[in-house]
Image (cartoon, rainbow, N blue to C red; front, top):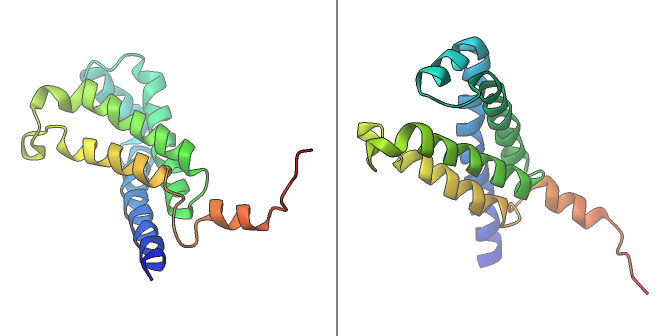
Length: 141
């Protein structure tokens, strides 16, 4: 019973965190545009803003989809956590902890959640788990 509940809880966490990243990344492409994100990053003092903007947008979209689908979870979790670490270092850290003042509370939570989901196996219906069940065992002699 506990294993089933854990698996469903991981599924819900995976989808919730993935949707947050997917929406934020999608906005960087569709609403703000990469040129707008680049200008915003430049104004924030983010180094190599012209490179960072598309990389962050792709990481957030691809990483969000990976979390939702439960695919390549350790890789997606680490990349998304690094994305949020950059947000803390370059944007939110100077504003203190509270999200109400632009602080790092929310992005720290997203970083931790990305790592937690990335390294727990993903729960029910995670593609990583489904693929591993279908692979035949390989013995090393």
